[in-house]
Length: 285
Image (cartoon, rainbow, N blue to C red; front, top):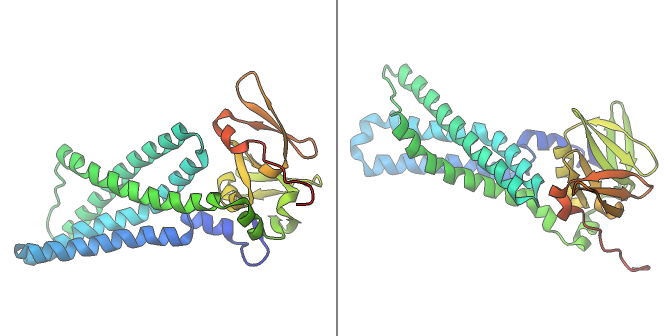
């Protein structure tokens, strides 16, 4: 795991808890279903006085849906992170969102049905979902819910990438701490050439030849380092864009990138737009 001096050492740990989505955005995604359920409960009981004697059912319907949504937020967050990580490959990002929508729909409906069955049984009653027609009825609603959640999470994940180069340099921490077991390595952002996936670990390729190995996912490290100018060049590689010195096309249509010090890394055509050669600053700037 890695962190920056000055209190950000738990960035990767927090990313694991919220699926890589910034905490504020994740909290907003929790507050939404809770508020929506409360409003629906009040509206139904106010507009349909006949339901007053069945208030527990109204509460069960709305609360079970909200609870199922909240439980699934880490799953949605990880899918959204995969989709944003696939950019600028639009097709791959859309494929992740389609898969995410279908997974959210099936798990959400299945979860709230199980919750309602349990509550109804405890009240000495029986809950009937309604078969295929009920599934068709729920799909558009779940589609809208997924789109709202994905939009909030995507906006939060992509916001650092929209920062100007000057603002990014101003925010750069002086040192990145990389914890390898009981040993901690320190490196400035410009001294980190690349990070590669190694099973359940990632390997850090430092300018001085060190290659510390830490237990973390490449996606979590990408979330931490993206604001510092690191980009995905391959599903298994994350590269410091400022340290790319050459790009060569291969016969397969992919690329081979050369970094400072002569290190070569693969560049997939899916990520080609992300690793264009950066404009060098004039000498003395």
